[in-house]
Image (tube, rainbow, N blue to C red; front, top):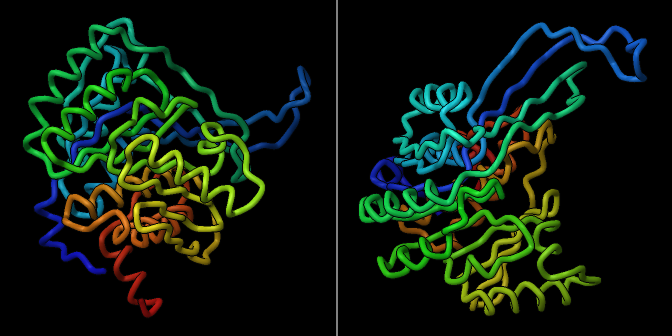
Length: 316
């Protein structure tokens, strides 16, 4: 199903969650360290991109819709850099600040076109800042068509259940990229989008497609979700809802980097739902967007033209 650029331009998505910076240090590897059996990387180039919930919001904007980002950051160098990077994207930012919080930074060292190591810098926000985020959420909610919670397990969504209740009262769709083993706090959402490993962490392993279907459907009903959308890497995506299930195959293309693919999938789903599609109608577009973004390096986005031109080039 096609959505016009005009429809998307009017669609407003409120993205709430853990924002971060993705840093990339590129270098040449010519020798092994005499100190330990590790490569010595001589850094020749550095790059910074917005990550986490900020990358999700960037994907919404890239598709041509409007995105507001509500997040909690520190009052450090990384937070000010993140704010500057977000300012250049078209995202409307609402940053809660906590001087005790270390803004999350994921530093990846790249040598010979391979990621050699990833270093994470982070801690958790204080309860007071999270409470103020809930108040800001109340004020922003009426201005948006859909809400997207991007949970990276960094502590920024400790009040997510309270916020879901507010969205339900407002009769708006709410989509969640979940994290952790306890999904009870996502009860009442329109849709959640776990990957295979994330779902298995909650339901336990399965030995067959029938067992997977039973576990996913039981979880959907238990959490009172409209839909559960399972992302399955090279196997595409499967949606479970009251009508049953629907699957779409992955688009055949070379996979270069899966970093941020989940961000693109949930952002595309939320954007299309905000524009008026059902989750079932939006899923093939989200699957296609995920297939496009894995062909790019690092945290990346998909444009309206890429998404729909790609469709037409494949005769869809």
